[in-house]
Length: 420
Ligand code: AMP
Ligand code: GLY
Image (tube, rainbow, N blue to C red; front, side, top):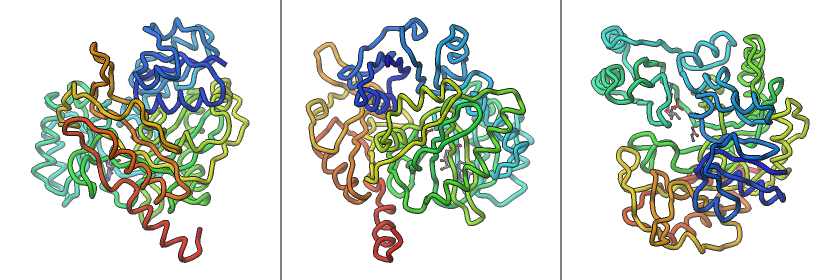
């Protein structure tokens, strides 16, 4: 089939690669230099592309109603309409929906005036979690044990200084503890089917230090997330959410991304996103054995039947980010070694890259490349990813050295004890 893909990041590059591998033809808008090697690039408008299936990568166009526009023209679309997209477009609304569906999540309050927000922060010992209500590209969340820092953050967000209109309402919530898990679920409006779990690394520096980013790396599968846990998350978080949508008349056809924390009280929802995760997609999608385009066609038609199946090998992706990311990424550095990189089991997905007039590949975004490797276990995939990364360079690049490290140690321990 012919598939139109909206987006220009590593997530879209991974989707396009999977579609092309199964013999489909892809037109991407606007795409990137990596995608250009696999697909036609379109200048847009997206809705004028001729295709059998429309897949929208990022959240912003969905929140703005792109899927409604396409469906209005009779097209088959993977991605919710404006109604379901509010789940990511407004954290306050998401929390309200979760509460009415009785889905386990952190206790929370919402505020739009600084005085009562600051007073509330003074009423408990922390740690404090402060979030912008609106979209902030994964960077609108502060987790801190320092009250003065939380107060400063609340004031900056509510004044509109830090995030403009997206920050004019804040959610302050209870801090949760435990390993995080990303579960991408295919949803056809009536039911959900989970893809294999992944784990993302949100902070910029090793050891989960520094500010939050869009994600600095990911791996799949996750040793502590067995089928039993996935079933529990489906039962306690996903199925009730889909039922709640149906009660509200929302026909949600697309990806439901559950960001979870595995707390001592069981899995709790940190957030829901309305799209494939980035960089989770880069490690989850290459592990799907089936023809993903065919499954997504079922999602878009409201008739999801095919059970997704996964290869047993592990995937690890490491994000190479620009100097200054996430606060003020610097553009323009020339990238060496990425374009003709070829090695069995390794894929280099492009994110913030562009072709300069000189023909060189240069940095054009905060997250630049995703070095993605497959191995018989997490340790092997991890080793291959880092070894490959060492052959690619640009000025003052940043990357984390501990992606999937703890998981590979856990995996070794579990296999020694005979559990996997
Ligand atoms: P979000 O954009 O809501 O996914 O938050 C980004 C990151 O902030 C999450 O992946 C967590 O690492 C952290 N975070 C968010 N909410 C909480 C919470 N209630 N307790 C602890 N950490 C949190
Ligand atoms: N990796 C986090 C996200 O896609 O929101």
